[in-house]
Length: 370
Ligand SMILES: C[S@@+](CC[C@H](N)C(=O)[O-])C[C@H]1O[C@@H](n2cnc3c(N)ncnc32)[C@H](O)[C@@H]1O
Image (cartoon, rainbow, N blue to C red):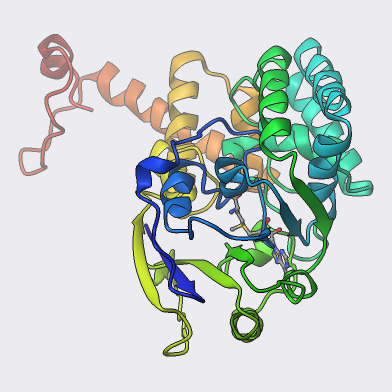
């Protein structure tokens, strides 16, 4: 994935990238987070500006890398902003939120504990639960159901970071964001307050994925571009990240940036996006590639121990109904049965059929055609 970064306003001198060192310690896991390339993005900001504004703050990667003296950061997702406001006002409370849930999670059935926290969040969306869910959900990709905004991601297979380590992150992030005021708001009223010399960095949702990923929030790129023009007329700097690959999954992203709105376009090479990276590792829930990998893992677990782990079952259940899951078990078992019969009876290989790759010891392949 490449991400374009447009800048607009008085032509700034770009800071050399080395002025901002990489800061890669995440507080939250968040889809679309820019932690890995935040220092590069920041290196294109003007050297001097008044207030820094980040109206789609998400997990705050760019904000914390920049660590500005004075900033306003906002997001439309209320529980997320509650996390940021708590970090600013009472970081110890944030630590207690995390540790409390981590202890319950680690000392009981993890999937059940996770599902309880998710249910509490879904009945009353709040920062404390979202904080833990973001660190413990499957693939670190919190997804919100389109129809009701409920989190649907199953429990992750990884061990969430220990409270001691989380506490250190909180302390670090508290210092880096101490000049920031966090606001729960749509982006528009926030940037309408931008003054001459303010620096605005926008990392909006990609239009076609935001409903799933960020809880069906109201976002339109054309509204942002119009607001951007007004900010420019008032003398603010604006940088905008968009997905420069123009393609995501099966959807084409048609990004129409009016000519002359931005002075320049810079390609930031982001490598694979978080979703794509998880897809490659079989850790995401986003595409058929992942469902294929879940099936392979199901076959492996059944083969190894004739069992399915709770984590895998929970991940499978996000894609298949209970009757379909039973059918998968029967299908896997059916092939096992065929292998017993064919190999046990020593059925001859068909001379015309292509052979499987020679991956097994010859003792197996010579006697066991299937
Ligand atoms: C791509 S993410 C930002 C990621 C962020 N740069 C980071 O590093 O984590 C987009 C964010 O925009 C927020 N959002 C969606 N619609 C919004 C709106 N209309 N106004 C403000 N924030 C919005 C989402 O909740 C989400 O956190």
